[in-house]
Image (cartoon, one colour):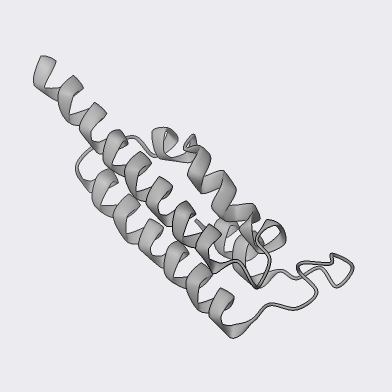
Length: 103
């Protein structure tokens, strides 16, 4: 999680055309996505979902790189990412629950 906060939110690349400047709106959306992912992940891990399963989610990798890939004028792309992240976290929890139910 620390890597996600560092690389997905705190770091900045002044040479990157998208990352040179980050609007307050984009900062708030990214921060909310990261905090939300942390809380959902924490609850899933408490239910027994392996951390390794969560780290494999493509939406978490995309969240880590969103600051350099999502332009300031496209907050809709962050909303789509939030929806994908929610879906994948739900699927990870459901998959774990079904495996636990089979045992």
